[in-house]
Length: 471
Image 1: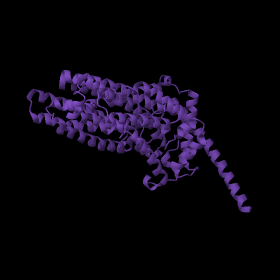
Image 2: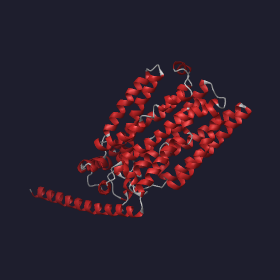
Image 3: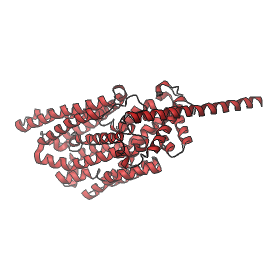
Image 4: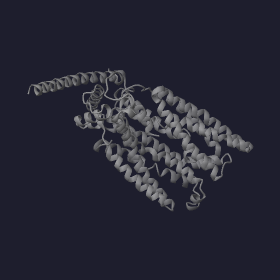
């Protein structure tokens, strides 16, 4: 099977030197705004809890009340992920972006002027609906738009262009898909070798999926490969919320209070510093994904979080016994270490990894399933974390140490590498060998057919040119 880096391609060696790649990156960067609100929401809610004015206006919410405020952002995402996945598969990707932008704008407007808990919850529900639509769409669209040699960067930077070529092929609009790939991946050259390879792979995968009838949600349970993908997506989705980050991202103020750090300037400073730190580390992780691979980064991340959370647990327990301020302050650097390990892989990689391990028919549903798992896990977190912190204080951290140990084992045995593969090659890494062989045979047939068509078109154009010269 031909590799994309072995083919002639009408693009510059650096993306910023190439007009087609620059235009493609501009569209992809626009899609990144779909997930900005997630990190912004966590940092904002943390920062608000440290402000006296916010606590005064909303009557110092704690426990279940605080949990409801936080969870209201995630609860609407749970049922809507199925609707959104169907919508973007049926009507195209851009409808999801439009709906997402509309609901996010309405939620932000209401939230900015709210003065009661009911209004605040309502604004967060609207934001949840909007970000759900935008996330599912962006997660499916970014790897479809990206140039093959830039796909790992584009997908990785997503969690830190209004058409989809693969969706167009699936809907029978092959010429439009070919034109888009040529425009953004070869500066308009329709017979570019890389573009022809991409078209062959897309058409082969679409034909296989039509034959296998993999378009329903029940398709996750039809084959061993899809069942493996299903469990991997659930593992990734829940781990992004259940490794301890939920406590730090949304309840940093009560966490710092467990070690005696309770002044607003102190907690606001830590919160702001964490946001900047996490952003830089997540960009680093996205940059390293193709050099070191997905699996090594995932394992480094989860093992690092396990070790750093043990230190957080120990320091919190030590402060509770001795009440030495130095012991409490020492926990802050380990919060940064913990979130650094989290941001290294669990921020940039899931949105890259999940769409690329799935066939076209399940790609939007995979993004929706990842979002569903995240939202279910996060909704549980938002109710459980503040109540548990109020009830057992620092001892609650031991739960996350145990959970991280479980995820180390799951990552070790379940995650497979997709480094260096094209989109269609990555989509079969969880399939049995016979399915992979069928996919490669179909790709070879499409390869031969495309070459035949390209040769016929070349001969036709050559004959036309000769006739024009004679005329």
